[in-house]
Image 1: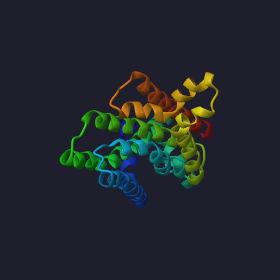
Image 2 (image 1 turned 180 degrees about the horizontal axis):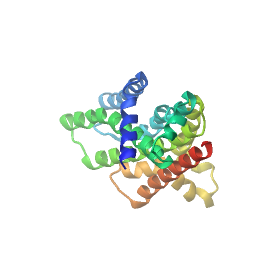
Image 3 (image 1 turned 135 degrees about the vertical axis):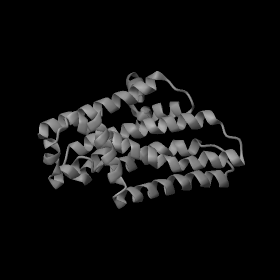
Length: 234
C-alpha cells in the first residue's frame, strides 16, 4: 500500500507541474460552465440536469487526454525500465497511476460545485439528484481513467493512446443511443454495457448495486488489462 500511495501522490503532483493539466481543467470548466449557465439564465432552469447529461460526452474526450501520458510517456522517455528496477510490482504501478489520475478528476470536479451553490441561492435545489450526479461523475470519471490507463499501456505513442482511449470511452457513452439499430434480443445486454445508462441512473439519485458492480467491473478489467500489457512488455 505504501508504494501505491507514493506512486499515486507522485502522479497527482506531476499533473500540476505541467501546463497540460491547467489547459485541460480550463477547457473542462469553460465547456461545462457555458452549457450550465446558458440554460440557467436563458431558460431560467434551476436544475443540474443539463450539466450531468453533458458530462459523459465531455469525459470521453477529456479523460483520455489526461491519462494518455501515464505509461506511454514512461515507455517513450525510457524511464519505464528504470521504474521497473524499483521495489514496486506491476500491480503497484497500475493501481498507483490509476488512483493519481482519479484524484485529478475529483480535483477537476470540485470547482463545478459552484453550479449547485448558485442554484441554491437563486432557486430551489433538489439535493438528491445533485448528490447522485456527483457520485455518478466520480464513478464514471474513475472508470474512464482506468480505460485511459489501459490505452496508455498499449503503446509508446501518446496520440495513439489518446485515440484508443477516446474511442472506447465514446463508444461506451453512446451505446444506449444505438439500441434502435440493435436486434431486440441483444438490447438488454447492449444497454447494460453502455456506461451512460448506468451514470444516468445514479445521477437521478438512485443508487443501484447493478450500476456500482458495472463500474467496478470495468475498472477491474481495465487495470487487469494494464497489468497484462505491462507484464508482456517486460
